[in-house]
Image 1 (cartoon, rainbow, N blue to C red):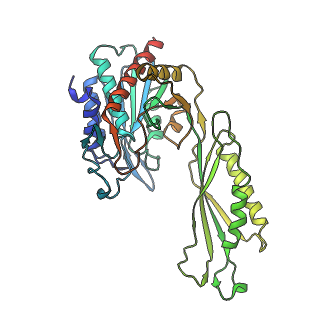
Image 2: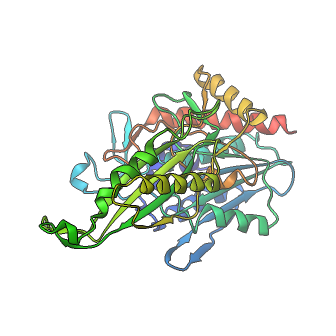
Image 3: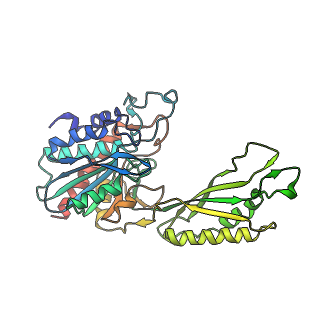
Length: 395
């Protein structure tokens, strides 16, 4: 067994030096494949395609052929680092300073992958990974992108190979402040829409000859935002609509615009489905337009697809085993949360029970993204404990 596989910091150093900005593979999947080969994993790197989207390379790695099947899911693609001058150390250098490793993807989420591989290696090294059990890794290069040619197709590919999973752990950074703070057992849904209000262009000095669509914007936004969509549920915070842009495409101050486009996103809880929420928002838009003194005018609503549906994994054997492993290593009892944005767990929940647990996410998507080396070791020990206990419970 090589040090490269056993040591999470060395694993992460290798992965961080791969410039895998979505959708580029950047050498990250190749490096991961090399780490898994000595552990007895067979691997495939399918490339998926979709018209209008970049082709994306993915990794499916499996060890074992029978028995209970545990899956780990993650992604090696990262968001763009931005100007290198904004970074204390170059974003793909994996520099170490003051006990921290710096680089784009350090916590989101190459660090989680590095720790899971190290945990597997330590179990294999001491003969603690059972022969009567299977482990698979589903690793995509399309989580930070449109998520079209990634996990959703990789799951179908795995099923076509006859693979069925009993449980899945996603290594996203879930902890707000310290390892052991939080396990994600669900996610709110996400629905994005675009409303275009159409008027009539004209000179601002002759408003009677024009029809300014922006004058309808106030009543429409009031209707969309009030009353609140709901008051939250036992597992989820209240659903929330955010207006993200208003655009007329009009640089002039003396021309009434011909149209105005409003873009918005709703993070919604289990009071709604994508379909029922669309129906409610369309009703509210119609009500807002009907309240306009100048009349409703013309409008069009376009919904971005696919919708990310809300889901929750009920507390049970999976959450209990993970929670006990976290407490055994850190002494903390994690909060079971559904906060935050979406993740690829939204696809996996249709195939098996899924939970998320990874590093502290304070610096994810920021310049100077970094992770404490001590956290890499702690997370590796949590994963190692969890894997051993999960298979013991399913023996």
